Image (cartoon, rainbow, N blue to C red; front, side):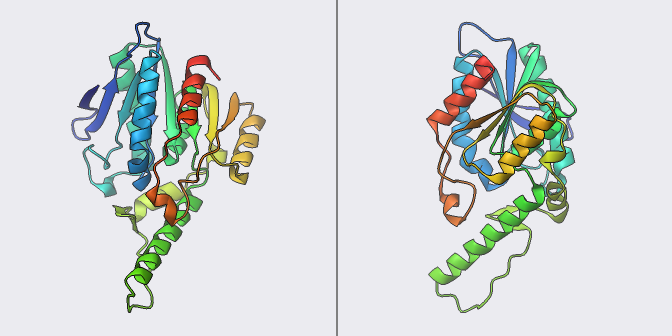
Length: 264
């Protein structure tokens, strides 16, 4: 494991490079695109575990933080979808240079999956894994608002607060600040409008939802090489109670590793 900073000296990104742990190295490297906000925290452990599975199979792996988040440079208000897409492009270039491979694949989780899909429209990938992707940015922002409001109400009831109303400010979600410009850029993302470029795509989902059925049908109509990988798991994305949960599913991790190793 090699933590380091890379990219533009004025916009340094923090990454952790994991070299292959297998005797036989693959001519392929995998970039992991984390979710945003509190979902980043709750997926950190499971994505580290997935990284270990991938390196044991001979993959080079890079995990990184977007500009303005995590350990990367920049303020929160300096990051938006456009910047994060540039960060993915920078990370892919860095990963290819340091691993000296000819094939690049990407795993994206939640909004990280939406970003990975958008990035693939400009950079053709070998394999692309969309794990419980955010398909509609506007609905995603509204969901965060609803969960934050429900959390405030829950805490008010718990302490018998005398204030009758605790309105949500619109910019604070579970301790993470999202400036208006960032929320606007997120809201503009519609995955059904994206033309993805990859030799093989896995739509990996833990819930059977109409939005995923619609996305799958849309991708099939575009003749994209997509397979749907449904691995049932507790809902850890929606509702106040989900904020207490971390996503840990050995079956799901193995299915992603198998897809990347064998092409699905």
